[in-house]
Length: 287
DNA sequence: CTGCACGCCTGCCCGC
DNA sequence: TGCGGGCAGGCGTGCA
Image (tube, rainbow, N blue to C red):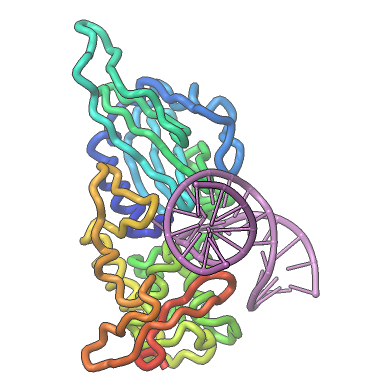
């Protein structure tokens, strides 16, 4: 799914139509995604104003004026589609025209403005929950997360401490959301290529210099991806329907058999499977 | 504790 | 053309 840059791109796309706006009516079209929706979710959302739309790791967080926060996760295939009101608004009425929901449209937010935001998720690995804002930090999904990559807490010393003694491949360690939050398969592959570190290298064997390099390449690749509006793969689109274009900048992800992008490197990108996930890497640059 | 396979879902693409 | 298998951005659970 979307990883941190895609979720941040979605957040930025949604903020203008949701932040400070009232949800006139929420429609919940099935009982669950990955887990059951919270009790009476549609009623608890309908009429609420969204004071702030934030993000923690890959979670979107909508703080409501009622003291609750809506937690949303896009899973692998979740999308937030924005539709401005159609042309057939009934004069003097708050009803706006929108096309009928499509397959996999699971939750619909009709804003007071007439704009419709639709949560669409083919694979339904996404999730929503609604909790007291004051209890967010103790939520079972959020309490286990490590620092954000851009927070001061994600320092060289911190990562060194977390990797120390761990016999797991560095690829797996960086995918572990308890160590650093927000990375997924694409950006771990890309960050390790930029750092010149093999995904198979054991976490405990990274030198302090390599650890410092990888904390920096993680921030660099995420910054570049956010600036490009994220990546568009299969199911993912930006919130406003535009295509992010960072996938054109992938150095290794999905490039098995293609030439390494390091100037002068003649090697071809290889794919190996680690813990059931594809790892793309250059056998020379990441030796 | 640690590492990893599995399951949850649907759709697409490839080879036969 | 159809069919089966593999693959896909995540992540909690349960097992060894």
